[in-house]
Length: 297
Image (cartoon, rainbow, N blue to C red; front, side):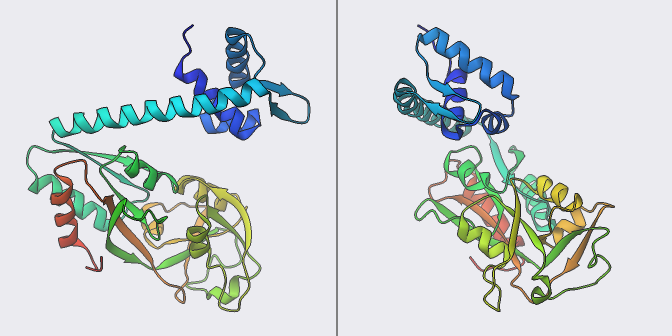
């Protein structure tokens, strides 16, 4: 019997979410497509993996057993792919660099690397708020420019601060604060904040929780990417605290960016694996250190 890895990924998504809609969103498919794939998998195996009712989705005993096996199989497959990609990169002069948002220092570093590392091909990849660290650990990118703070991975990552950026409040154009030049954090107690999906300590830093007066901000929807955050703000579902560079590189007619001068600035970190898999990573970090607007590591 031949079971495809795609079928196992669909099953694991549904088994972990216990909701076809959320699983479909995670897989970037439609819910009917996911449901059809699970039905085909059950037919091929000859067992029921899920109990579906109008109110909930539950795993059967066979589903629980397959979930454990499928997770292990997919993890093994992903490790093999990452190993093969590392071996391939070691044979060709390609350096893959990830980033979450645009920044002038990042541009300077990439331009210098293209000039100073002859024969290398730089490939860039835009990352989600939560995907940067995993992309590094899993070997999907060789280096990544990430907004600090990043989730702690002791012994797994190294980081270099390449820039510090004041933070702004992102609001829809019609918001009462939209015409202000600046606003204090204490004035934002009535606002709903859109935050990035991610570890609590990182999210709390970005939304300034707790506030200086000990209160916590009201939380709204979570965004997985910069584009999602901007769209939610424009739709009036909340406001967001973002680096000032967002106002330069991602300006929109339906958004305004108001300086918040009394909170710590955002850091832009160049993160690399503690044991770089690419021989040119060290040279790339040296170039970045030279262009960093702060040399703090």
